Image (cartoon, rainbow, N blue to C red; front, side, top):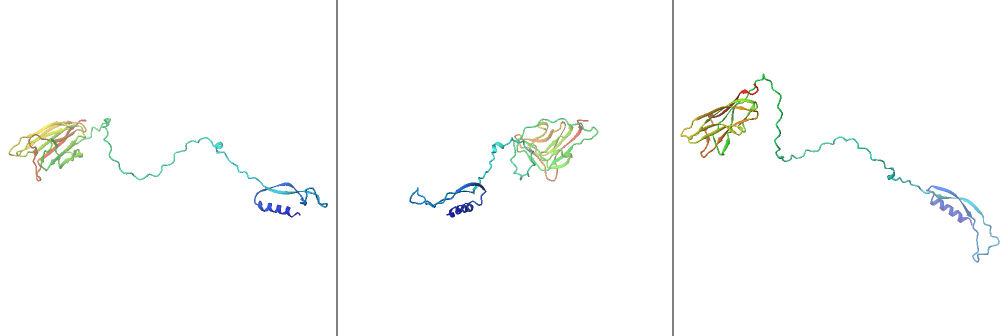
Length: 255
């Protein structure tokens, strides 16, 4: 009659053998047989009930700690140092031209130069092709360069630019065209300084004009054709040179 008790003990060991165990004392009674016919009747030779203690294993509860991050969160730290620059990217496409800016202020006066240094400025240019005025005012462009010291004469615009302030001498020689008018101005910036004029005639002639000008730095001197009711023209051919413009520095301003 002790077989059921042994069966229960083996079942507990096989089911929870892998889990952590704790051992507790438990009293286990010795059951006896009772007749089914009546609850009050007992057999004469029924054994007495006995008590015994044995170890019963129970699984120990698992405890998993939980950290509350809101409690452990510290104060905000300081800003770290700036890191090294990254690798440069590819060069982008060139953008459109911006709006022309305002003219800047005049710069400061530069240091005085060496008084013993000799300064020069001179040019002599010509035009080998004939020219007819098509506009009311038209600048004369020269295509041949005889002398152009330090490139003070701009061949693309037909303008002499003053880089050394002082007294300059200028001379203009032209060949008129028969039956056509010749009307020219020697210009200083936008101001008319001298006129070279020849009336229409049945024969062409050489005409000349010369003058001296007191120029400041960045002043410009150039030749302009002036068109009126008559046709204005200058004669020339490919073999000879008739139209010549000369200029040179006589005395610098700092001497």
